[in-house]
Structures are given as C-alpha cells and as structure tokens.
Image 1 (cartoon, helix red, strand yellow):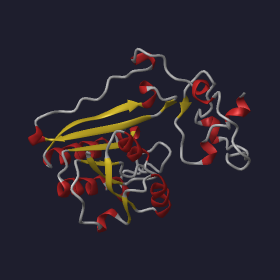
Image 2: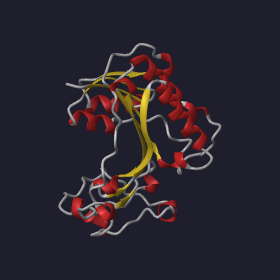
Image 3: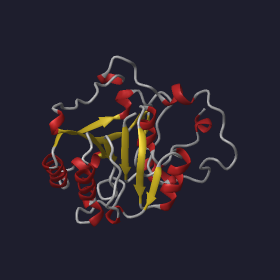
Image 4: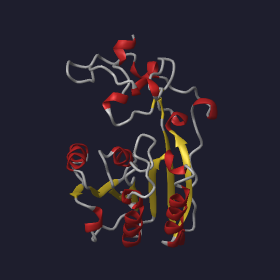
Length: 242
C-alpha cells in the first residue's frame, strides 16, 4: 500500500481523497486544534500532530508528501497582504520535502496565488521544489467543475516527481462541461433527492449583503459557486429554492 504524509491538513478533505485512492496516511499535522479534532474523526488510523510545523523535525518515510499551506494571504476573501509571514509557509513544505524525500509531492492552493503581486512567491516555490530534486508539473489552475463536481472551484496544483525516478506527471484531461465530453453537473442533479436538513443543522439566519455582492447565489441549473469559509457567504438551504 502506498503511503503519504500530509501537512497543513485542515479538516482533511484532500487526505480522504488519497485514502479512497488506496493510500495510507501515516502522519498528519496542523496548528489548529479544531482542525485536528475534525481530522481525527475522519482519519482515525493516522497519527495527528497538532503543533506548529516549524517545531517538528522528525517525519516518517513516505511515498508522497501532500500539503496546502495557509491561503489567507492569497485568497480573494482574505487580507491579501504580500508581506504577511503566513505567505511564506511554503518554505516549511520545502523543508519537510527535503527531510522526507518522497517519490512525489502534491501542493494545492487558492487560484489567487497567480495574481501579479504574488507571482514572485509562486516562482520561488517552483524554484525551491526543483532544487530539492523534483520534476515539477504546474502550477496549473484546475476547476472542479471540469471534473464532474457541481461547483466552480478553481485551485492551483503543483505535482512533483523525484528526478531520479525519471518520469513527469501530467494533469488529467477535463471530463465534464465545455472542456470535456460529459455534461457539467448542476446543483439540481446532486441535491434534488436529498432529505431536508434537521432543525439547527443549517444556517437559517439573515444573509449578509456580501452574499449577493460576491455573486454567491446560483440557479438550480447551474453549478454552485465556491463555498467560502464564513456563513454569511453560504448559499441558502436547498429546499428554500425549491
């Protein structure tokens, strides 16, 4: 069974994908306690270290290193200050990469990183990963809608294969929507037959004006917009639209 180490795990969405693909996640880290607690509920066989990544210097051997370093400085919904220290946590990913020396790595982050005022940071990431001994594919912006998800969610991906292995990764060809052969999936297709959520299990307060100003609302025959982290940006409960 192939193995992986995951850092900056959040709630573990990427790791659940790896697990379903047949990987065993040996070790995972994050600094936020609630993120670690959520992760443990979903990934009970993984050793979770809830600590500052800079304080960890011993890691298991693994085939793959995966990470999504914090995006607050790059996100369109964040402060967007290029000078924030949080923007440079990719250096910690690079440090761990050089310690573990996995066969491959996967990096995912928000598409705002391609903005002109951040491109120097993006270039530096690629330079570091190449100098660590990896053939890097990307950065490339992929949209989940192009792969059968009923949501327009654009994210940057970089994949590196260790140079001595002698191969280069290619991103998958889109399968859905205008770029693929299959029709794009809509909110109606994936939500129509779902039961109503129990009382108190969904956001039922008044919505902030920001909800409409950011074009959050979509029709049933459209994919959902990217779900942001604050409840004031969330779409309405589906039965409201029906």
